[in-house]
Amino acid sequence: MRLIEAIFPAEKKEATKKAVEDANPTHFRFSQAGDDDCIVLRAFFAEGGAQSLVDKLQEICDHEDNWRILVLPVEATAPQPEDDEADNAETDRKEKRALREEIYDDVAKGASLSSDFFVLTFASTIVAALGLHADNVAAVIGAMVIAPLLGPILAVSFGVALGDFKLLTRAGRNAAAGLLVGFLVAVLMGMALGVNTDSNELMSRTVAGLDSVVLALAAGVAAALSIVTGISAALVGVMVAVALLPPAAAAGIFLGAGEIGYFGRAVLLLTVNVVCIMIASQGVYFYKGVRPRTWFEKQQAGRALKINTAVLASLLALLIAIIVFAPVGTMPEVQDLLPGK
Image 1: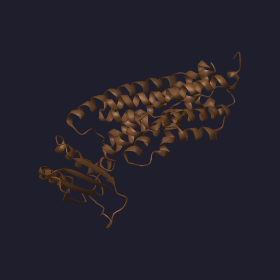
Image 2 (image 1 turned 45 degrees about the horizontal axis):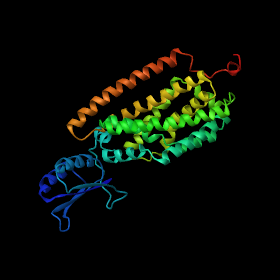
Image 3 (image 1 turned 180 degrees about the horizontal axis):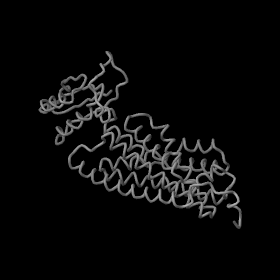
Image 4 (image 1 turned 135 degrees about the vertical axis):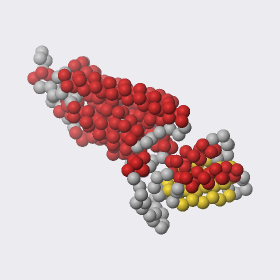
């Protein structure tokens, strides 16, 4: 449920009234905005339709100066809105989601660089590296809880869905910066601690199988759905961290310890996870009907989506081929890890 509040010039009232009637809100009313030559619209939506009204209002007021649209979540209302039995699958798929502007705000916040982002990445990598080295499952899980990896990864896919190259570039830079910081910290930890070949937590991150593809796809779907539907992203953020932080930390540890073979296997797992999460999240955005507002932006987004999907699909096919035809899908035997073997 949402309340749309819009302030706009009085001469736009007739056009706005038609837009409101087309959007069919549960309830709406117009009022005068104090002494200003402006009108205030309040429209309550119990179900879908809010996005179409917000888009139309922006189109009507695009070349004006004194207008503003507010999107307010509604916790409860009395009397309770009646259920619309006429809702079909298409409405359920596209309309029962957060507004584009709400999604953008959430994603942009998660993709921003700050001192907190780097501190959390630094801290989570240290905890993960220590947990992997000591075969401490609780420490690895704790590291994934505090790892801030969800925002930048999802922002990349969202930038593609909207054809927003500014957001795409910024999110890609931030995701790379976060993973690089974590990787460098893990390299230093590997140089200091070496490799504990008895750690199942560490050595399992050298295994990339078809189940890894399924896990990463599921993580991407869950993460994107949490953003699109407005559900709290805290728990699915942990799921994404499962797919990203441990293999990144393991790769750094192996490289720092000079274990190039196992470093390559950990990088393969990390690459599989990143590609799958991005493919899955793009699929969710497309399925839920997340699109730009204007025709020109839709054309840009369509081209960006086709190119990005083709690149990611090609990468995934290559990675699956490596998994299937190269011996990287099984845990290394302990005797193979001994010096001279």
